[in-house]
Image 1 (cartoon, rainbow, N blue to C red):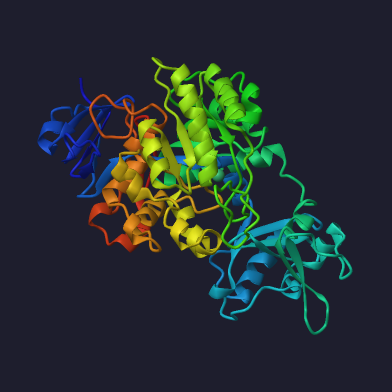
Image 2 (image 1 turned 90 degrees about the vertical axis):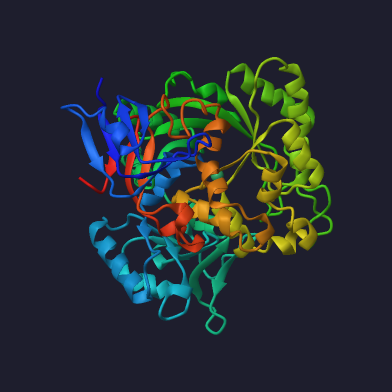
Length: 523
Ligand SMILES: [Zn+2]
């Protein structure tokens, strides 16, 4: 029987160690039916076969993002993208244009400005925004999302005046000379304005999330582990699935709080959409010093962070997730939290003996050699976001919070791989950019701790076969092999032959999901 689609003249990087590189792939329906030389594949070309000559371009398995918040990414797409504004004037022009299309009184939200990129080399201020949008409330997030610029209308709606005291953990900036508000809000002060910004309407959110899905395939993603943040995503995911607008395979990860609300989702044999796991957060975050540590923060001697579960209560929650037939995904940041997660998992694994349960720890950010060994013994998958790791070292100083000796054990990916622990990669989009190649580059560069660098191939495993393994789907996807699902991506260049700091610039030229071309630069 002939193939439906053949891709020839390519450099196929299969990620299958038994047959790593070949020239061509044949697809019938949603499966890969043959791999090999151009000559071998040509035997499957029939009258109706679509042939794409790739002229030496690279094919890799469809990329898998193991940690992404798609609905929130969609929300951000409704916002003005300020990342390219090279001057305050340019930013004002963007705002003026948006204000013209927005009814007066309606909010204008933007993200991604950074004074380092502005020709003027200064912060935005209230009058910059007032001039460009006098009739709309405006809130523009700085690139780090820890700082916002707002205009006078926004301050008025939030009831903030020069007399309003700043909240604990945040500041409302004032001009040192005049005492007037500058429009800059920092940290928790942002919420004083953000809390009065209305949520987008459901139809707006639906379209925005569909647009986000389109961006996923444009970025070369064919599967995502969609970590839900709010309950209304349940109906959005279902609707987009019914309308055929998801485009990628979605493994939904529900927070434990919504565990009982997943009724009506397709079951796990649905290869396009199912609930895969449930997330249980055992502690907070390192930057806010709420991650649970065994010894206090170096710059805060009375603070060890906080555990949200005991071993016993965590075991009970893991038991609830297992009873539903989902994968327990324990989010643990500090070493104390990872220890607690391991205690509970060790306990539950004994009870589940015989059954194969694949446990996963999200982050496992701060480790030590003992914890790394226990991760290996329990065959736990560690899920990280390499671009977030890079940001942790640049935006806030991990070394300051943890001290240099402990900071060396922050996301020790090389050490974990050497131990034989499977590590998988995601973006945490929209907190960080979507581009999976940026994550691969960050895992390879690892600028602050070069001894923890991975090879390009190892980083690619994190987004392909190992990511598939993390959800128990390694027999279905993650490599380009006969019999596997036809999920693959055509790249402009081979990441393994590209200078490391240019991997992020490789273009995605075509994405195939379930045998269908869902994105292509060629047609
Ligand atoms: Zn996240």
